[in-house]
Length: 122
Length: 246
Image (cartoon, rainbow over all chains, first blue to last red; front, side, top):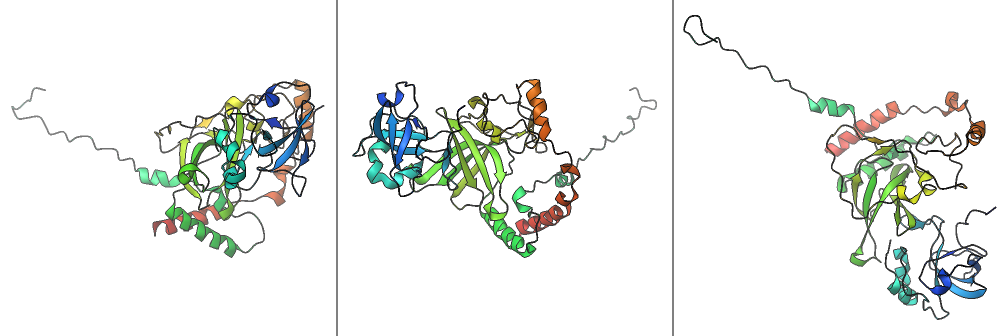
C-alpha cells in the first residue's frame, strides 16, 4: 500500500516537478524523491533548496509549495511542488504553469530567474 | 349600472391597501457571525467584551458581509510582493473557525489543475475587500471533504461575476451530493463522527455498515456537553445593534 504524502518536505518525500523540463516530465517507474534538504533543520518549506533523485540522477530543486499549512494568508497547495534548478540557481525548464506563492518574491535576488518563468501567482 | 333616480351611482371607496410591515419581519431573522459567540469555559466574560468592542470597531471601518460555509468569495489583500500591491483570490469557503479577533475562514479553489487553499483572518488589517460572489449554503458546516472530491467540485472561475440576489429573506441550500476520488481519503468521511450529508458514497454496503460501528449514540444525550447559546446570542445582538447605530 502507498503511504499518504507527507506534509512539509524532508528526506524521502515524493515530490511533484512542476516546470516543463524533460527531466521532470518524462515518465519513470519511480517518482522523484527528496534525498537532502539544504537547511539547518531537515524540514523544507517554501523557498528552500533540496536535492532530488530523478531517473537515477541527482538534481537540485526549489520548493514552491507544500501540503503543510503555513501561517495565515499564505497558500496551501494540494501537492508538494518543486522546480528543478542548477547549482547556480538557473531553472532547467522554461515555463511554470502552476501557481506560485507571492512570498517567493521576497528573495528576488536568488530566485529572480525562477520568478521570471512563472506564469501564475497566488 | 343604470341609476334609479338619475343621480350618479353611490360612491364606492377604493379597497384599503394591505400594508406588509417589512421592518418587523426583517428583525426576526438576523445573522450573528459565529465568532461573536464566546466558547464555553471559565474565562472572565470581560475578555470577550473587550474583544467584541475591537471587532465592532473594525466592522465600522470595513464591511464584513454575511457569509456561510459554501459561499464563493473574492478576497483582495494587501501584499507588498504582488504587482499593484494587492492580491485577489476567489474560492469557496470550506471552513469557518476561531472565535473573537482570531476568526478565520478557509477559501479553496483549483487553479491550473492545482488545488490551493488559503486561510484568511477576518479581522486582519491586510484584507482590503471581501465580496460575496455566489450565495448558497451547503448541507454541511465543514466542506473539508472537497479535498478528496473530484476537482471539478472545487473549481471556480476567477473572473466570475457576482450572482445577484433577489430575495432578502432566504439563502438557498444547495443539496449537491459530491462524488469522491477513489479511496484512500485524508479522513474517513463515511464515519458518523463527521456526519457528512453532502457526499454520494459509492462504497459497498458492507463498508458503510462497518463504518456505523463507530457511532456514539450517547453523545446527543450527554448533559455536560450541552451549550445553550440563545440567551448569550440575544445579549450580543442587542449590544451589536446599539454599537453599530452609534
